[in-house]
Length: 219
View 1 (cartoon, rainbow, N blue to C red):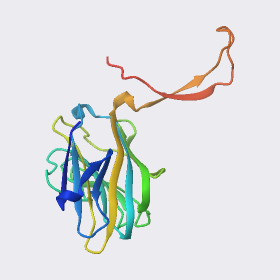
View 2: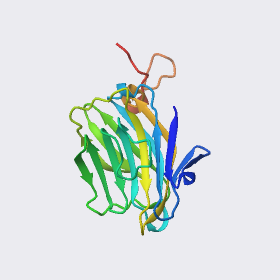
View 3: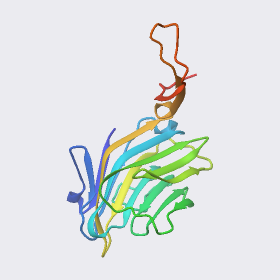
View 4: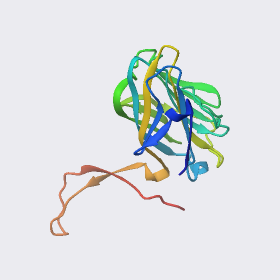
């Protein structure tokens, strides 16, 4: 997997110890990253997990975006995302999370009440399945669920991008860590009833629930 970094100023966007710094807590900063994901054209089902730092500024920043699509600009882009596919926007200055697909708003959460500024790394999970749609969680809270993306069909030319911005009078640190993107059954949890045997003949009857992640099956 390769990544390209773009920023204004350029030297404030960097990778250190696996962490990606997109903006410092200063005004009028923009930073973005583009990532090539193997087999992205097969990602009818996927999960993107990362730790997000969006805080630490005295007056808060504008936000950060997650984009999947083609035609994502190879230049700094911001919290509104880029490209012609999927965009998930964490708009911290507005207190909302939005999902855009093919340049149309398809879901919105928060109504201006979400507190997305957190001066610590918090987990973010964005996942999609054909049956259940798109879900978005931030810091352990499920913000959107069951968002259907009509005509969802990733292409091999698609890329993944992140963008962030601080405003004229709003500033936060925006950083990512522990980015993981997986597809298909690599992330789909399987639930089974678990029993224990001490002699390979007699089993418990408690039917304890056990979850695991199955290996991909190709047929």
